[in-house]
Amino acid sequence: MEPVSEGREGAQWKADGALVLLTVFWGLTFVVVKDALAFADPFTFLTLRFTLGAVVMSALAGRRMFTPGLVKKGLLLAVLLFLSFALQTVGLIDTTPSRAAFLTGLNVLFVPLMSAVVLKRLPRWTTTVGVVLAAVGLYALTRPSQLEASLDGGFRLGNWLSVGCAMTYAGHILLTERFAPGESVRGLVAVQLAGVAVLSALCLPFVERRLEPTPMLWGAVVVCGVLASALAIGVQTWGQARTTAVRAALIFALEPAFASAFSVAVGREVLGPQAWAGGALILMGVLFSELGPVVWDGWRARGRTPAA
Image 1 (cartoon, rainbow, N blue to C red):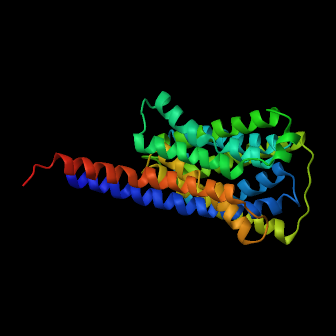
Image 2 (tube, one colour):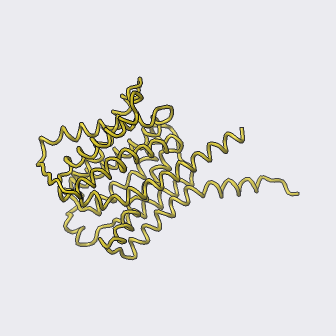
Image 3 (cartoon, rainbow, N blue to C red):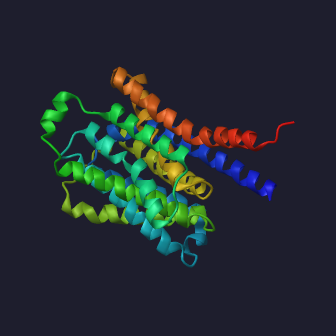
């Protein structure tokens, strides 16, 4: 039994490492998406991005995307993923970017709560501490300035939509953990991307459309469609088949920290001491969740070892 346990632990560490690298990449693409939206409205960009991703992943998945039961699971994940993007996009109209970033990041709290209710599974105390540290860090990193707070005028509709985004993405993370094991990763991702592309296209008649076909826009569509959608969601699905939804949500809390660091590196913004402290708290939360159980179990094992 011991080798099996070690094998599972090793697979979980590899999955967590892959999710960390994925989060780094998502943080880097934040600037790419922001620049692309200067040339296309959000739903046009989402349609182009996810259509390209769906075409690429469908070609790789082939018939595996039509296996019994997989289409239903993929479409359910697609609805949650689309709602996350749509709620965040519409919510930004009526709230500040920093407040939306913090509220969206609350999925790090919603996932453990949903996991306890839906899966009847409580996280370890080390993971709980890590989640709290990450949530505090998110607030410090994305806390709006006094000017933004005064302009925001209280908890407006945009804020509620951002909270809805956090809840739907938390549901996506949770169901990905539940659906991914035993399914074709390529097939499940292909159905998801196709579903989001169709739902985004269905919104186009109801929004003000804008499209300026520039090299920067098409470059962003390729990067986000192939890498940040097809490849990235594929890695997420593979990783979540080997780790828990709570650990995945905690790792994804690193995204705003990586995005902020990259934005500073390219000269887009300057972070103050509070923001840097917030990023450090998020990192501490992830490290505590990952390394805490190893240290704690080792300490308990030594305490149970009879004296020589």
